[in-house]
Image (cartoon, rainbow, N blue to C red; front, side, top):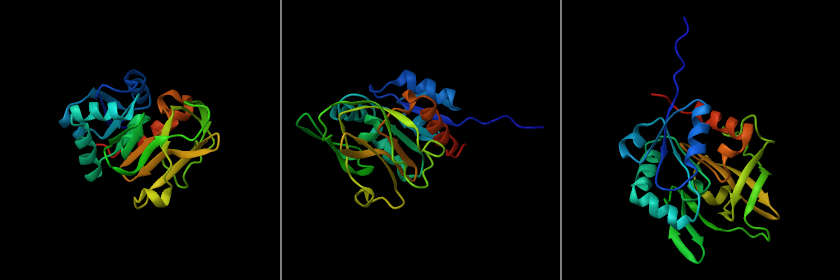
Length: 216
């Protein structure tokens, strides 16, 4: 007799920023039991934590500080507990963000600076391909797919500059500007694009991430 499939538990961090409804639906549709919450204990206990984000870097950090989300992220990463950042939720994982003349500190889980893209057409909005990192878990089966981006800022650091042992960096290019599209660094993963808005390619990526979670 086959046992019931155990769905991983995911805390979707509610700190006043992010496309929460579509992220919630996408995670649930791809196999997760999702709780939208800012409760510290729930966020620490879940099999996975998803950090969304839209808008300005500094404003997102203010919201994150208000609920202690930055400390939750650092605690999970230090304990080897999976975290997935999306869009500005990806950006705030880095050291700093320089936006609209304001230099704001980030979570500092990854070294690097978020800065304005060097492109004529901003925001970078719409579908784009990526240069998937070799051996990527997130992009397995979707290396040639298209993903949906909406942003004017990004990180330009390369693999040697991120300084995280075993890190996998996936890139994308807008006009002639090559930037970090995704990071996989042990328990910490993040995407500059929106997987929840990226059709089947994004659904596959979420399933890949959910399938990598240690359940229980």
